Length: 78
Figure 1 (cartoon, one colour):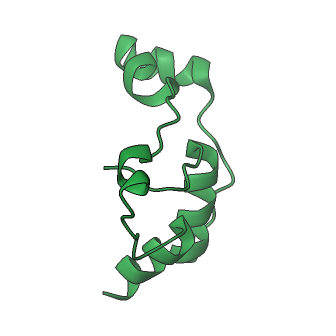
Figure 2: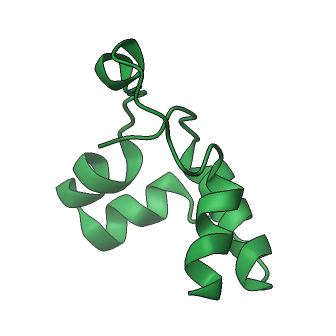
């Protein structure tokens, strides 16, 4: 399942860092990820797909947490 507000990995990392009050200042360069993880880096870390829950939205599903910030804050306080 996906949320109605897809974010990039960069955005996710920044929001997660802000929620956990941790710095997120050093992104992993793609070339370094490829050196460390090989083909797995391309398949799991560097590729991207923008997915939205069109089917759920079309049938009127209401998401409890509308943004990643809210969802992560809920998890952090649980």
